[in-house]
Amino acid sequence: MKLKRLMVYLILGFSILLFAGCSGASAKSENGEKVLTIAFPSTVTTLDVSNGDGATMLKEVAGVIETLVSVDSDFILHPSLAKEWQRTGDTTWVFKLRDDVTFHDGTKFNAEAVKWCIERSLVDNTSLAKTTGIASVDVIDEYTVQFNTSVNTGDLPEALTNVGTAIIAKSSLNDKGEFVSAVGTGYFKQDSFDVSSGKFECVPYDNYWEDVDSNVTRRVVLSQSDSSTRSLSAQNGEVDIATDVPFSDLETLADKDGINVEKFNTARTYFFSYNLNKDYLKDVNVRKALIYAINKEDIVNDVLLGVGSVPTGVFIENMPWANNDVDTYEYDVNKATSLLDAAGIKDTDGDGYRDYNGQKLSMNIITGSRRPGNSLIVQAVEGYFENIGIEASVEVLEGNALTEAQKAGNFDMVLSSAATGYVPSASYYLNTYYHTNSNNAKQINYSNPELDKLIDACKATNDMNEKYALSKQAQVLAQNDVAVYTVANYGAVFVLSDEVENFSYSAAVHDFIVPYETSLK
Image (cartoon, rainbow, N blue to C red; front, top):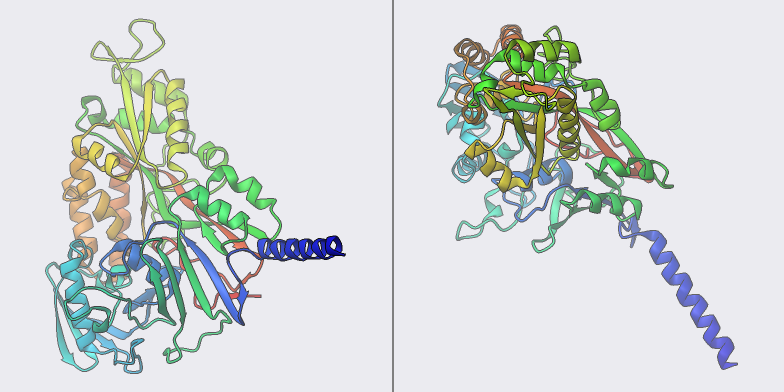
């Protein structure tokens, strides 16, 4: 009798464990709640909006904070916390604010709140002044603010879509001025945050200013900076949404029951910067030869497994200011070798490798480890260069090591990945990576005064037709110089639980956004 009772207990215990294992840690339905669990591809150590990772998670993934202006997937601006705006001078803009919004603590969202938050962010986020051009904020009346800029910029509305300009309430700080919680205006409000693990939880805010159709009663955001961890979490049903998983896992993920793999093109690129401090790279035809040697279609289709697209210029082709009529230097090994021969870079000693000034040309290509395609691309390029008799070595470096290598100039080429819509304007990306005054141009010793003038004029005007025309002219010069060159358009991979409904992707966001309407079956 005792044996039979023991067997019953064992079977019951096994059944409970089996059920718990199948349900996964995402707890999609727990105590009557609909819990949406999301893997965030970085480690969040603070919720302060002055921190890029914290602000990105809070705005785009958790939905806790909002900006004055929003941008849709077609890169068109829309009102958000601001109803309308007008440029009133070269360095002044006036924004009218919504009068029906409250913060999660119940206090009013108004001009004073905007002034306090933006001016605090300008102090605590040192890059924000450069991104936006804002020098100060004046309160005109309860729901009107004037932004005063330090530069002549027509890009302020675009800059105010950026996560760093999201508005929080004063109660986010304690009496000592220390950040304690994220009190925003979004559809979700903070419930808890574990700084040791980066786990964040939020619930709907009852007094949100817009109607939202979603059955999710709680969002849980897990900090998972390791791509393999995100992949495993998705496979095990521990998260409902994950992105930037290893490309080597895509086939396994696609075959897994209960999850779907979706690919999207996005406003982010993989681009090479050539170190013009190296004598041989000062020759534009040598730089072009190195591009002709790379099969960009194979990189996208075979190396990146179709995650991304072949570039038609500096920007993805559906951006309204993209110039898709520039030269992209299609794969042509004969063209590459003839340009190198003409530049005097030849195999002079018969060892199979090209020489420059009597020495074997050995290139060092560096990249960072954060983005999944970086290491794959540089390894493929190493092989392409081998095919034209150039020895190359590659290094995949962690963040700080990469930064130090770039500062020291310890590279011939560096592969980077950047959001071309970080500020969704026709000038921002060009200004950040091609302009003489940009950190990237300084590091590679690149300068084109004519290009600078076009970028400056593009940034200054708020006439969209003029802005787009100037940007397209600038893209021609940039592509002709090929000191900075787009080798592939970035692709976003999402692993979604079968339970997820109403998820949509916008190419215009910083990394990825989970719309308020995203629901669970």
